[in-house]
Image (cartoon, rainbow, N blue to C red; front, side):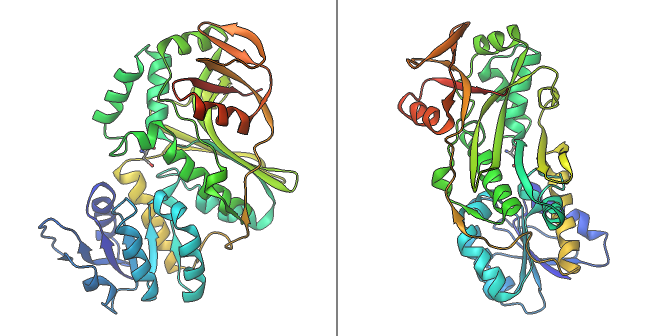
Length: 369
Ligand code: HSE
């Protein structure tokens, strides 16, 4: 396998290093805007040097961002090259454009590192869906948010202090809003749902609430009730439809999710036959992420295409109800007071997210019963 590598940052450099010692694959060209010298690969600055090179059969996209990553990936696919990427924003945003092209060209397209970094999550979903109906996917999919919430809970840091630490450790995206407002998790749960259920979830129908407004006072109130706050994603079958959303969620102190430390991820599927299966590991970082990219390259060598068929468009139905902790202006039915917040009567997930849009300074956390 001859590889054209797009990007030589955190992930790209890791992929280069891991593949250097393998004899079944070789990075022959690296697209990088900076001047770099590599012993075994040619550094190029123009994408055409890779797309028009017939000796390159596979492109690894490790640039991040939507543009020009999308145009470059598309050009590689048009040229009949297999593509491996760790870019969840790209795959989620352009699912409708890329998946039909993958089918038309008969190429391999893998993105296991896009959800869960080094965890073999999407690759296991691909296996799991072959022998059973998947009922639910989701969990803790963002290391930065987990780092912040874990430190606020265990060491009493304020939100700002914990965010600064996460940034200095290099977990956070370039724009931390992508992490703390839940966008990164939103991309990951939409992609996971598409693959698990073989559908194309309408992104606009998936609401997201992040952790930006959580305070030390909220965390104290949760502790007093033996609860821990985590940013949790959910994608599940409900009747003939699907419910998909991302929101801070209070889990009981003894549950697996409550114990996830630092920047780790814990992602779970529920299958009709296997029941609960959970995957725990490093959701970010150079070598875990690059490891999964190389796993994908091995899968390309073995002829694997995409994880699931490109399925029908569906809109999420989030009319199911939950109780929520809310701090900041809720005037609907209330069951009890917790510190500066209240616990609402059961309210539809869609309704609570619509209310939050009108009240952006509030903090909400669903209560997992
Ligand atoms: N910023 C992401 C995280 C990186 O914190 O999990 C991996 O997607």
